[in-house]
Image (cartoon, rainbow, N blue to C red; front, top):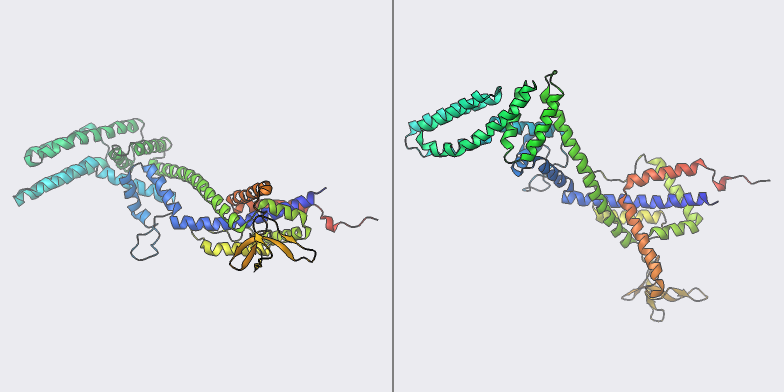
Length: 456
């Protein structure tokens, strides 16, 4: 019987919630931009994936990632971390870091640094130069191992060269003795992994050998990342043995790994943004007194108001393919501008909102307080005003019951109405826009009672 009226009330409420959602999203995006939520959340996810602060630092300093930084707004400030990283750049940057780690294995790099310090203390410059040249020859052997199939003989040759070097230059013997166990464990890990892929016939890509060496190098500091990359490499090799495109398949697997992490990040960020939108919506509902229960009551009781808002909602839905005014990420306006705009929109739509009416001059003979409801004599003159006195002005309170124990239930209903507005604002403008279009289509599919022809 009242289906048409119910649909019109629903359209009015959804339209009001849509307007509130746009305002909440605008402010939420402004806060997210100021606090850099996206960039920080992305950095936390990357740090969790790489499981190593130093490796995360290397990743963000890599040229492919550094080019994504946003320039600082003020001179002298650091550039902003990127809020978005393409999956292909993540994979390329990570592969490049691992390749360099494989070419310059961490035990060798550590040993080289300590040997350089020992050689710098030599008094004979000719001996110092000769020792440095000999050590460079050993580093060339390291690079050859990284670029070719590795076996125990090659590793034994490298260890023999290092030991011979220690005998030739006794000054570096203590340093070499200290690092050799780490070096031996490093190459032993790599040989074990190498034997697995060689047995499977997958060791055909020199680039993968570089990466495996890098994975072995970071294994001591980031075992979690080692497990993840090793699993990805094996998966890539298993699907591309005959095509000999293991490195390409592995890169795609890395990209998928990153995309999966970004999907989880999107879910986390969405929940965080939704919670922020709820509190923002609650704040807006409180300061503007946007009560969903009161709005529904007024829409039901006043057909003229209902028809005006329905017409406005239909016009809005027809003219906008998506919610107009929805901010793009990182481009939201200042909330100081957004709240007055929201007030203006609600006023234009004639929604019942706000806490106070037009101020009037305070007269002591006409009480103005929050305890009793407004009352008028037969001529319509006020005998009491529900309001607040500020100086010589009385600000009448509207859309709210008096503050006394007889109205506790009314105030509970008011708080529920405000909370409903906040929860609605947290759903987001796209959600309410879609529902608005659906309800309008349902209403349009029926016959408007006002358009029915008279019978007889």
